[in-house]
Length: 236
Image (cartoon, rainbow, N blue to C red):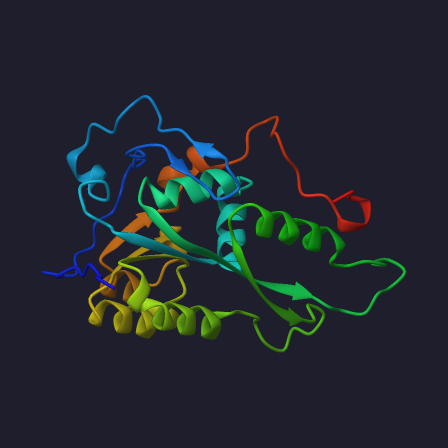
């Protein structure tokens, strides 16, 4: 199998001030098309992603990190729009979504603590995402739950099969994994809220995108055409 590699001349911090337009329509595996916006970004530096041959793209989303970023921005993420934006007209190999699942004991106040989340994850699996979960008890505050190990292992293991990795996380603990991936010739783009992103992660990445610059293009509409229903109330 021929694998396109990227020669990294220099790890520079390139920040995208505004949105990066989709270069063309893409097709998600469930048949939903994402159309390119009519207006193009006039700033030359803002279209750097589209100017490159990104090859096959693999997306790795730290769900917990993205959730907190969305809270700070005051938006609710539309995950179909997000998938279209991150793929940006390139060939999508796979999109991973990593998150914790609350398995705390049921209480009178919380009879089904993770029912809504399970409905959301079911929807994600049906709409283009490979969901990776870790069971945690949120009542236990002894340690901060994360899936950094799972993200790092998948990024490194799949390196021979993709040309560009899009990491949606600002966690500095992933710096070593990103450096390992770039050392093998793959390109890594980090997408996160700048105030939540480690400088060390930006330094080793090939490209950084502040999610604040595209928030208006990945948030839910006022009247979304879909919702995440609890499984017990679903007919699917």
